[in-house]
Length: 356
Image (cartoon, rainbow, N blue to C red; front, top):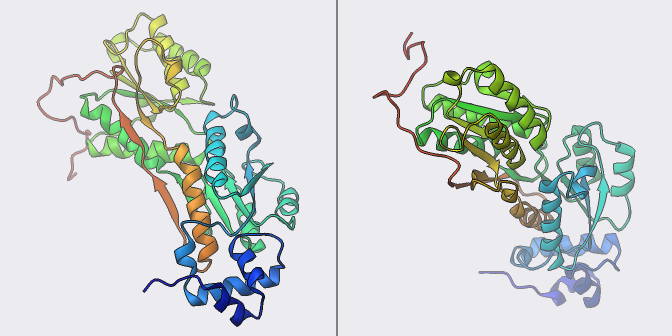
């Protein structure tokens, strides 16, 4: 039978006043830490917190740590939108979200400890912070914490992230399903999440008995800008004979896809008639003006809301097992990818046989 919240009973068992118990369970800060711990422990023993999980956060202040670029829409629109939706998800709980810029790696540990140690900071959210020392410090501080689009390699902190490997596999598999076998991948590997996407792309190639050749099938970028993609693909097109060109390009982001389209146009190649173009992103389609872009949408707006759910569960059940929630991408097929028919009757395979 579902346990009902009985403030009077909790007050009786803890020896605290009804008003104090009520303030703690409402997430108010004007109670001592000792009183809060007694009320929460009693409520857990009575089994009433699970029923509250959908409606209350039981805290007032959360501190978000993220790279500096995440707070500027022009520098990182993805993280900027994640923060906006995180703030929106917390607003319904009347929770204050504050911010602190922190480097992804080699982070300022003293700054982190100083800000997290502030008396009114009750929980932390780390967005894109890869430094394992910071993860260790968050665990040692004992305050509830959730990671967004990063991972605790020691598996102690709950996290939510896009399923980067699955997203890469889904995008490449779509191109294979449309008949493409010669695919050039425009990839930026500045972070391990992009390496996961590339692993997923390799998985898709392997499922079609093909091996992705790094020299032939990869074009590595330093960033996700349209300018660099346009320049590097332009150089690639100059040095590659027409008969050796790919039938499709898979870009690691919309801006990269926009740069690829400009490079193709400058070299007299049409999209999708000559070369198809696909993106892994799907949120900046206004940058693609002439041809609607096929893409796999990376979950972005959902990350903040799911992080709030994970944090609430962590507060209610601090001893429960935790893990990483991987969110699926969404395939959207548009006019930038055309279907082609193979001239061969069977799927191409590697030179090495299956049983050699």
